[in-house]
Image (cartoon, rainbow, N blue to C red; front, top):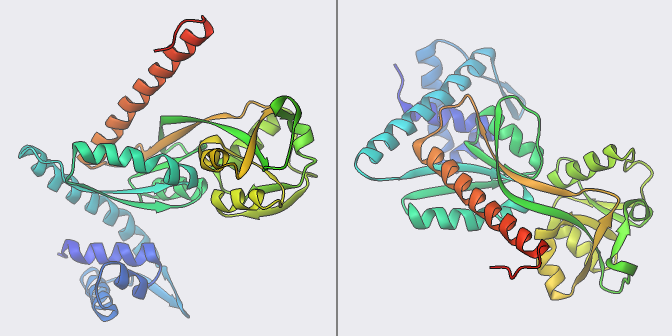
Length: 317
């Protein structure tokens, strides 16, 4: 009845919430995008979008079509990849959403190693905060996501892919005894925070709640959308911050900031790859998940052996 290109155009209009932005993203003219949508509406004999001033919203029929459109495109992609696999090829595109720390410090390395094995795989990576990553995977907009906190959605499957620890970073003119500060003392400092929705923020708030504490009443002097901005603010003396040790590593090594342990809270965490448990994933996406699972298992095993050797005063290997 209608071809896949019409469906592809429709999905892009929904996801970009704009005919013009969809046209730009898929390299078509806005008039061509409009024609595709009009053709779909004629074939289905329904209206797919309501125009509300400058905004467009899905009609009930449009919402139904969007659900099935995602399924149709996923099945099409799987069919193409299955054929490629039959001829010993692993090719295709994986759409990935990643929160700030994984996007900047973890995902590039993992993708690079996977592409060394499967050079025909192309990744499209979109950076969002952790909450948005979970939403995009839950809605089916992205096949997989990477984030640093669990959002309890029954639709999502979680695979641990790395470990991290939150630390206190300060301007480099700070001097703190015993290289650590208690969390209650930290809450009385001038604090710089990430905006709500970040995995770091969620881990911190959860750990505080377990101890009967909260950020209410804390001396928060500013909030930022990115970890890089938080690090810069600390570097130039605006205050102190609790951030990922991985993310702060470059500033610590360069001497731009100092890092201290946080006592009174357990702020270790996992980074996760997430996927929709009920969605039909492409073969290359399934292979990617399988690969990352093996990588983490090997890294965790190596870490445990090193820790055991250190604890027993043996020579680490």
